[in-house]
Length: 169
Image (cartoon, rainbow, N blue to C red; front, side, top):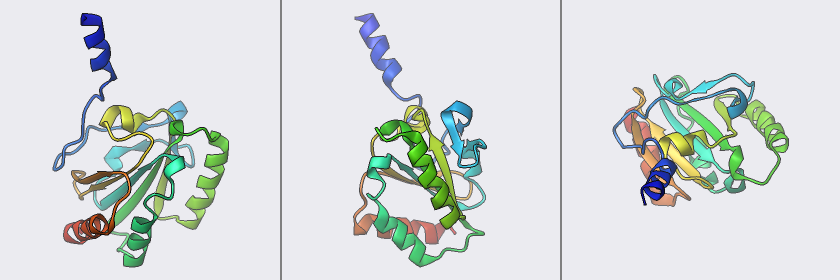
């Protein structure tokens, strides 16, 4: 019984995220992934601007396009607003090289968005966010979590995200 309990506890994420708190720092680098240019990405970069973070299974890449379009239409001032797209490469059957090639093209098309490859489900393991999903996280200028949604946002949720960004800019 003790072994089963230990096994179950070890499968739980190290820390679940809480609204209003700054998540524990996470770095994705080397064999784990990193930015498109292979430099490390750290969650400590989610400061000084309001940031929206998309954590996406490539199989769910279109799930929250409506939010992406709404954000694009708002054209928030990039000196106060940032966006990050972290692709959960371990959540798909698609080969990494094919996804990485598409990400490089997206990075060229959307240079203001930081694209990150997560090859080992780092945010799933360390922050406890949903795997095999499209997760939306919003952070204030100090890096505190303002919003977390797992799955497809409806119009009400999209409006809520836009308002939170506007209030915190």
